[in-house]
Each structure stands twice: as C-alpha cells, then as structure tokens.
Image 1 (tube, rainbow, N blue to C red):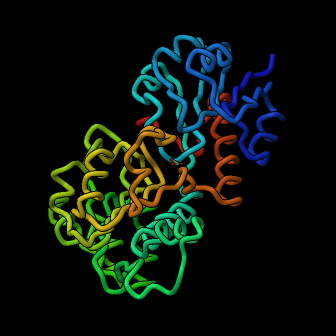
Image 2: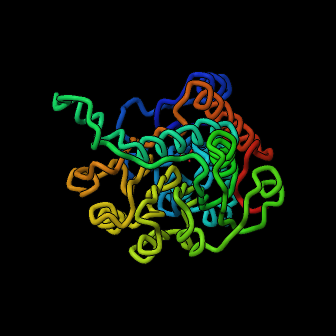
Length: 323
Ligand code: GLV
C-alpha cells in the first residue's frame, strides 16, 4: 500500500507532481486553511504531511494523526508553528525550506525599509484618494538612507543578505545582534556585533530577522521603543510575535519612532480593529517575503524532497530536529 501524504494547501506543481508520483497525495483545495480539528481528521493515517506556517502542529495533532506519521515537511524556513521537541520525542522528522528564499525575503526587507523611510503609504493613499493637488514642498518628507547605521536583529542568512544590500547599495554602517559571533560577516560587511540595547540606541534603521522563540517573543516592547531614535525606521520580515504590536502602535502614533514596515503580524491576518491600520507611517504587507516564482518553486521542491525522504526513513534534505 502506498504512503499517504496530506498537503495542507495548494503549493507549486514542481513539488506536488513529485509527491504524487510516489504517494497517495491529498491537497486541501481551499484558500483558507482547515481548522485544527479538520486538519487532524484529514491527516489521520498519513505517513507524511506538508504543512504551512499557519498550521499548528503539536501533540494533539500527532495523537490524532496516529503513530505511522514519519515526517512533517514545513513549506517555510521558519517552523515556530511546529512543536519540534514533541515531534523528536515521537521519532517524527521535521523539515524546512531554507536558503532558497533568502534573496526574495531580503528584497522585501529592503523594499519595506525604503517604503517606510520615504512615506510611500501616505503618498500612495494620497494619490488613490484623489487628494493630490500639487507638488508639495513640505509634504511626504522622509529619511535618507545613505551612510546611516543599520541594526540587524538576528544575523542569519536573511539578515546577512539584507545587510549586504544596504551596506553595498547605501554604504550603511552595520551593527547586529546574534547568538554567536559572525566573523565572515564582520569581514565582508565591516559589521560589528553589539548588545541589543546599544543597537536600539545607535541604529537609524532596524531590520528584524530573528526566529520566534521564548527569548525573542515581544522583544520589541515599550522599553525597546523608548531606546530607539525618534527618526528611526523599524522593519520586520521574520515573525509578528517578535514585536508588541500595541507598543509599536503607540510608538508610531506619538513619534517615538519615525515609521515601520511589516511583512508579518501577530496574528495573521492583522485583525480589522488593529490600530496599525490607521497609522500612515506603518507600511504593512501580507507576508510576501518568499513570494517570487523561483523561491516558491524551489521551496516546493525541497518540501517534496523532505516528505519523500522522511517517509523512506532517510535523512531529510533540510532537517530541523536536533541531531
Ligand atoms: C516565511 O515566513 C517562512 O518562514 O518561510
């Protein structure tokens, strides 16, 4: 009997076709995700699951799916949606899709940084509302990028790619926080590893690239915004939970920081009553960091490799369980 795989949303055919060749593959056909009980119900009896970052995969899910489950293949680089410790305890392999979305996500970080620094949201809304009357010498005045200080929070692959763009393109000075020293980044980008408080105080632009974990949850709270420059711009393309959104809204509304650009929120989608919707100095995108043809195709291929290898009992192409 062939292995059964559930794919929790439609993903590029480059990956799906490979799974279909080797397994009995069922794909959730709707745009909105199945709720937790439906997800568990459809996944019951599967040996492999391809999940999205919006699917919560935990002990209750594993109980419902059954002991034959061998692998969870997340169609994302981040995997905070999965209880990896619990999967490991049960001998279930977990895989992710790193590297192939690094450039795509770094491009969005830089795009958000420019958009927030140069008042794109105000400008776009002004034009769309037919309120553009004349060339405005005193309106839509933003911040320069060239030669400023960039703070990267989380100097992994995407943080380094974002820093490289801003170092080489705008000659920014780069400081960063990271769990471990990054001598190659220090060399290539003349970057300096600092404590978070120093980074908050000296940076003109801050781009967040850390994963979401108990140490980084709500890392940017009211106290952090207090330390930042009133001219500073904050960009987040990692996970919404790294920021305290109420504190961010207050900091943006009272001029404690200049602007923010968010590709991620908590929760997603951003609730309709969030104050961030009302703030012209907050540019918000619907989590599109990896959204290019090439990145999503490559992610689908890795997700397929991970699920097929896991079902065959072989090491995944990109495993995230501790070795
Ligand atoms: C996107 O946020 C990802 O983790 O791939």
